[in-house]
Amino acid sequence: MDTSVLGDLRAGGARRAARRRARERWAASVLLLVLATMLSAAAVSQSVVEDVTARVMRMFPGADTVGAVEGEPPAAAVSAAGRLLGFAFVTDQVTPIPAYSGKPVAVLVGLGRDGVIRGAEVIRHEEPILVIGVGDDALSRFTAQYAGHRAEDEFRIGGDPRPGVVVLDGISGATITMMVLNASILQATKAVADSRGLPLAPDTPAAVARATARMAEAVAPALGASPARPAGNAHRPPAIDTGSDAIWRQAWEARTPRLWVLAGGLSVLTAILFLQDWLTRHRRLLASLRTGFLAYSVLFIGYFGLAQLSVVNVLTFVHSAIRDFRWETFLIEPLIFVLWCYVAISVLLWGRGVFCGWLCPFGALQELVNRGARRLGVRQLPLPALIHERLLAIKYVLLLGLFGLSLQSLPEAVRFAEVEPFKTTFVLRFDREWPFVAYALGLLVVSAFNGKLFCKYLCPLGAALTIPSHFRIFDWLRRRKECGRPCQTCAVECPSQAIRPTGEINANECHHCLDCQVTFWDPHKCPPLVEKRKRAEKHGRTLEHIPLR
Image (cartoon, rainbow, N blue to C red):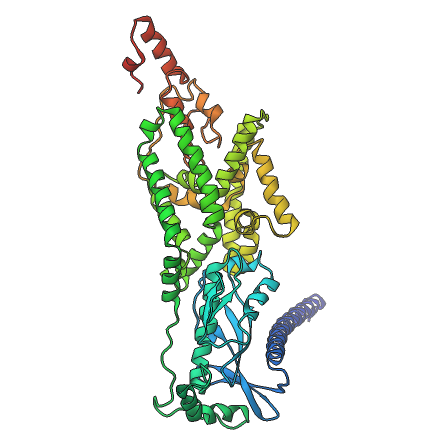
């Protein structure tokens, strides 16, 4: 055979062998990666089990054994030298009450055989206010208050001490989450106590009878015996209402006065919007109304009602709609729910500007700071139109980034949503780590020189509201043929720089402050009207006879 052919055959065989070895190395690498992932997951799982076990041991001093999680509802028996001490369980496995994130908060609870709670600790949650802003110490202090009490005791979050009532110190800005925690702990405790025959109240005939009938069934798992299975429905615990419905009803009842104040404010705003053509002809009246409403947004909606809307609400809604939508998830925050309903309607009628220009507390605070700076003679530094147009894209990029991150991990998205300074300003009132405080204060200082800079360039919530704004039904803002050609009065004065040099109003960026509409009707300021007024005065006519449209 020709030597060149033999050489080609050998080369081809060598190449095939090399490719085979490469495939084997690739397969081995994939296998090692899979094994490493499995071992890592197993290690994480083992560490979680060890952490939970250690917590249970702290709740039951002297305990030496924590049994397997079993039974209905699921709980683990805790014992010492073969003697049952009580049970440990996680609330979301017993009564999974959804919190504001749409997911239940997992609380590890230790329940003694005498029906007394030995301890409670939060081990997992996705609540926005708790993910970042409220430290673990605050959570631990809250749940520690349940130790030594029974589920049948009357608990109250906040308020003055009263005989027979256990008053719990809540966490500022997280009242609803505390209500969910309270309901989860108490209802899960009652369910476990009833199923294991533990007394819910001390020394009552019903408690003694129940304990006598079921204690043997409860003790068996703790001693390593096969757990007794209830026959039929003889010993099955009664159905436990998850309580989510009751929680949102309680929240609405507790906030009835605030809801009336909010309804009054929204009614005033609605009247302003529908009467804007008349009000914009009365500059001083509208200025007073607007200033008063901005103060209302900051003080009541922001600081008192803690109802600042956030992009976190949008992400939570999207996740809930994709996975397990429940109205109760959103009804537990009454003020925020009502505000979102109003914003949804106003976006379709007026666009995003109603919220951004009137109902956003942080936006209102920036505008009031800018007004004060102007009165003090602070020089304004608006950005050139070209740079302004380019920077508008930042908030949309932030929104897309947060949405993409939320698909992977909602808690992580909540962390990065701190680009909104709302929690720092209104919920925590600047009482947190200095970088967050410096960021929020820095935005307010900058707004003194460039009005509402955060709203224009950085707000992901404003970007989210722009999307449905494209479907608004009406165009309420009046323009003239001279606007932009050549008149630039409104474009120069627009605080949000939403009027293009060509005269069109960029509805995506308009905050509906109505400044341009005041100018539109002002025969002493609007250049086309000034010209009409001067011509009319030459002929001896009064202002009432000037056609303003």
